[in-house]
Length: 294
Image 1 (cartoon, helix red, strand yellow):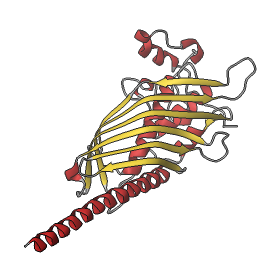
Image 2 (cartoon, rainbow, N blue to C red):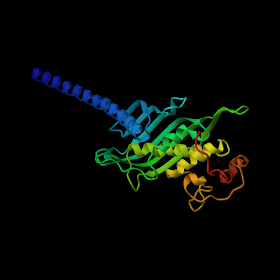
Image 3 (tube, rainbow, N blue to C red):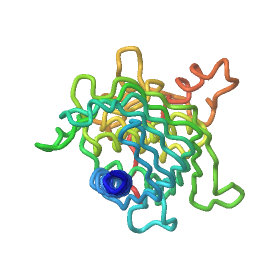
C-alpha cells in the first residue's frame, strides 16, 4: 500500500513539474512570438526597421506589455532613430484571442521621444516615412490574419526634439511637449490589423507635432508636414474649418487657395485660454504653394 502511494505521489509530482514546464514554455514562446509579430508588423507598416526590447505576455491574465520600442530613421539622416517608446501596456479580452477579431480593452503608450530631423527647406524624416503610407483609408487586413478592435488608446508623455538646419543667430534644436493623445473605438466600423494600428499611432503623433509646432516650426516645414497629413486623412481638427476643409490650402494639397495676408510668425499662440483661436490664426498663409524640397 505504501509502495503504491509512493508511486502515485511520484507520478503526480512528475505531472505537476511537466505542467509547470509546459506553462513556462508557452509563456516563453508566446513572448518571442509577440516580439516577432510587433517588429514584423511595424516594419511592414512603416517601411523602416522596428525593434522592441522586452515583451511580457500573460495569456490567462489578458495582459501584454513591452518596453523600449525603437523606430529607425529612413536612410540619409544623421540620427539613427526616429522614435523611441519607453513602455506599452495592453489589456486584452482573453475570450477573444481565439476569434477572428481580438478585442483590446485598453492600450497605454507612455514615454515617447521623437527626433524630427529637417532636410532641405521643407523635408524631414517623419514626412518621408508618411509618404510611403497608404493614402486616406486603412488597407484591409490580409486574409487569415487577426483583426483588432481597440476600445481605448492613450499616448502620454510625448516629446519631440526638432533638429533644424543651422541658421546663424538661431537655435538649431526645438523641444515640443505634446498634449496626451486619446483615441476610442478603433476598428469600430472596419476592423484593423497590427500594421494599420502602427500607422494610426504614428500619424496621431505626427498630427500632435504639427499642431504643437504652429508658430514654432519653420513655415515651409510645417506646411509640408500638414499637407502630408491631409493626404493621409490624419490632419488635426485645428487645421480644419467647421466644414472639414483645410483652413489655408495651396496647390500642394490640390484644393482652392484662400486669400491670406498674415504670416504664421505673427500669430503665435498667446495664453492657454486663447490656444484654439491662436492656432486658427496661425494657420493663415501656412499652406501656400511651396517650392520643391531641396
